Length: 221
Length: 120
Image 1 (tube, rainbow over the protein chains, first blue to last red):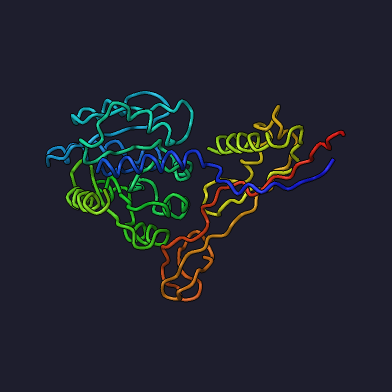
Image 2 (cartoon, each protein chain N blue to C red; image 1 turned 90 degrees about the vertical axis):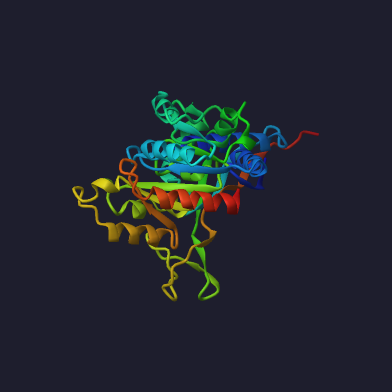
């Protein structure tokens, strides 16, 4: 019996990373800007996305969305009301989306006909941060009901985000939301990140958010 | 908790690697895990025991080496290790740092195996 050390130096999520890289290439070739929306359950990702899809469609942009949940197609039905093509991904217990699921659910869609593709991840602030989905922009969402220290508690996710959205800003006051501390905490974890303070209900912050999307599209897609 | 998916992927990778060493027994699997990789060592260890059952990795030890977060500080023009994950600032000059150079690793570094001597 001889003992031997075998060097591997191999990424554990190599398969996912390779698929994500291939997807990113496809998205770039098609000229579609792909965004991955991540937050806790209950932050209001779906409501924020409903509003975004509707506003973008009104501005003449071509949009589509994939939405991940453990079970049910409730979110897909909500988002489809905007008129945009939407597909539900049910993970059946898996706490995050993976690149392979994205690839499968894009079948039959002409990516080149789209300006924006949104991926609403499973509500979870930990696991989705390890899985690249081929997106260009990762968006972390935080609602005014969640506590200003959430970015400090989940640095792995907030540090990997390109933009941060504060949702439900219309109820900030009754919730005792400390805006200054929240902004400071986000900046402590991800210095210089773009932050949007929004309300899907009143439309607050949507103009700035849409302008950012257009900027990113012309810059990166 | 995605540690089970991660461990399953380790089992697949190592099993594949073992094809080159027929009959070998795995003693140890060593990982490099960044402090920002979003995995918990306790959960990895727990899942490892379950996921390696009835595989060539059964009974092997999982060693997790944590890799610290290194950020590039533009002001000091060097890579610095941040003191806490709650504040991405240079420990030298206190300027915010956003350019990550190390800390998201999630890789199998090496495996230690017992090879079967070939009978001549």
